[in-house]
Amino acid sequence: MATRHHNLSRFDSPLPSAADMKFGIVVAEWNRDITEALLEGAVRTLRKAGCPDMNIEIKYVPGTFELTLGTQFFAEYTDVDAVIALGCVIQGDTRHFDFICQGVTQGITQLQIQWNMPISFGILTVNDRQQALDRAGGRLGNKGDEAAAAAIQMVHLQDEMDAASPENIDRKNIN
Image 1: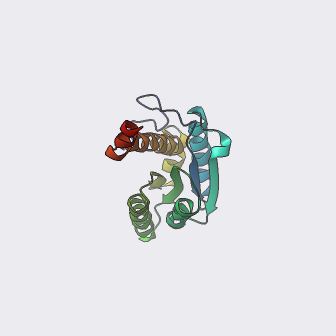
Image 2 (image 1 turned 90 degrees about the horizontal axis):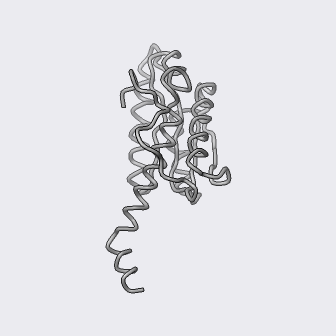
């Protein structure tokens, strides 16, 4: 979603209740002042949607590249309904930026499919520090808010689809 004229902390419609949902949040320590601001936004949005603090588990990884494995650990070792991955990669003078961004994007996408679990991509990929600040609670809102909202919406969609699946409908008709 282009953010040039869009505030990441404003949503077009109300969020579903997250009162019965569990979330894992994996946060990159690299560019920590930015990622902590993203984390604040994500937690604020989860709480606002009714998610109790005991249903929010936060873990840290060294950098954005490690978010993929940190996310997999949540999928593999916990009972969360969704994972929110938060990181920030700022363009430098080398192609390192491209490799990190491509690797984490492909990794997160692959994990969603492999684990059939919503994983929200709250990773800033920006040209400079000011762009990161603008998207981590600055003039364009907070990508952490947006990532949490996406996770809530995807868990809600998955629950709706599961409830409407032929297998579950047949079970309801038998009882």
